Image (cartoon, rainbow, N blue to C red; front, side, top):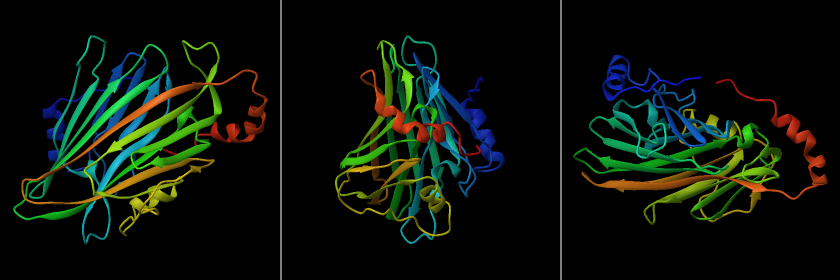
Length: 297
């Protein structure tokens, strides 16, 4: 399926008609990788938005990655993608066919702007990488305190049966799918897929994190109460198994004109497994469950 690319003027016209009501779709491509973004959503945030597909060698590993915010004292979280988009454009930065960089600017008039940049790097094998930056600038005449949340829902290998998720150090989230074997050139054997997300933010702004089963955390982001993540400090061992999602949350205060920046890198890599692997027989039931896609778009 081909996804259209919209120019800056087309996106601006769409949001001028109905703020947050019109979806604009962008696609990035680089060698073996393809990523799809939905840049607008309704204010309630029920529809998927942000990164809604990440395909590597034709296999989709991502269900949704998006951002939410609230000001201190707010009674609910708001999806960043519900704000008007004042700039939205994809670019081709290398010799490979397809745009590989997406830059978005959301504007909460009188309060802040948020620039989000995604840079996709594919490969000639099975690896794929997305570098991300979020820059939030206070455009008001008064200081404010914001709570900013990243929500990530991988469906590694195109199934929901992740068997491992962890937050092993303050800057890293890891997930592994051991339920589905995939062919991973140039390897001659089957592989599992794993995701590693490295997150770097200004010191002292990290507020908390959570790993849980879908859809509990996603539902809490769309209700009428502030979302407080379960773990306010420290790191974890392994969680699993099931349809695992994770979130991280930051809290910061910006004076007029000040900015806060979040840098992230998401890496998808295959993990070759030794053959034969009789232990896989124990995972047959979970693999069958994972084959049943569980959600409506």
